[in-house]
Image: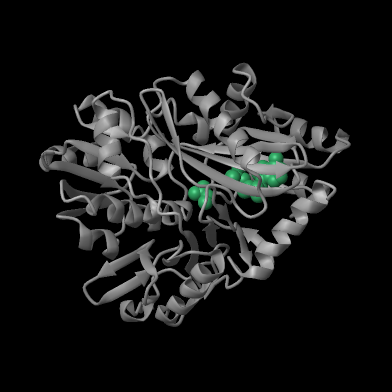
Length: 432
Ligand code: AMP
Ligand code: GLY
């Protein structure tokens, strides 16, 4: 019989609501949470919820100590970068999330590429790192291929500009000159279809989860600026409809190579891949679950997340993961104007009764005494879970009746026409 474990969850988004839901399905878990916004979904599942910033290391350690936490799980990268995992571990609370040094695999894109090169991790695009804006501009001018321009630090997924896609060469140089970043990575533009594979990692074990495809662009048809992610889908098996099982295995091998090079790594390792004609290349690594990807993955995980956490803490081999064998489709409702000019502080309504069979995950909304308010980020997600992507899509679409005014959705996520476009694109690249 397992004893009760007191778990502190850090973060207030949709990803953390999905983590809270997964943990609370295990009756041995007593959940507490903290974040800068009061997420009503997470708060409803937790025995306590403290409003404290995700980067307030001392505040989080004080709360963890106060509730006598046995374990902690970190949702957002900002907390990892701030050293929350280091501080909680130092306080004797085992934390599922890498220390700030290992999290550089996400938080420092220059380090990420240099690490891949030094450790011979497969799938690294050609790249160069610049601290001097004018030198970067000259490199862009001299390059005979299209490049992706990436600030080295965290930008919430919104800092990358791809030449030939969002900007031309002049636009890329102007972007660099306007922002004058301390460090930028310029790398070969990868062409293909993107997918994500997330894995639970600890004690040298890598337990991968089914592939997910996120939709970063703000508007339907993959138009507009990049966002944190407008929605995502996964299939009933590990691959997506445009992938082969070999593509999935190649992606998992890349994650395993990372963990071989970082044997102390603990937490979630997230690989973002671009699938081209010669297999997956690495767009980036993240040191945590994706948001929205966590909302696809955790609802179909049949293995107890708490069992993964306790095995990790005890230095044991991680349990083999079992999944429900269902497809999922997530659609995010975001504030009007998101991501460039989001209307924060707008009062919104979410009709939980209208969600039907789908799951509802609250994200960056703030629950105040008189109701729910938007922040500058995504408001809530609905997730359909069914035997096929199209059934899950229909479920998610029905659930969007829950959204009141002032919110926007990408309705095309998971629709048959868009999925088919991905398949046709891959076939074209593969010359089939
Ligand atoms: P990141 O913040 O690294 O995830 O980048 C955000 C988005 O920019 C990715 O999801 C891709 O759509 C795009 N991107 C990043 N790097 C590249 C690249 N080398 N080639 C093409 N697109 C890229
Ligand atoms: N969905 C992309 C991310 O979480 O970074």
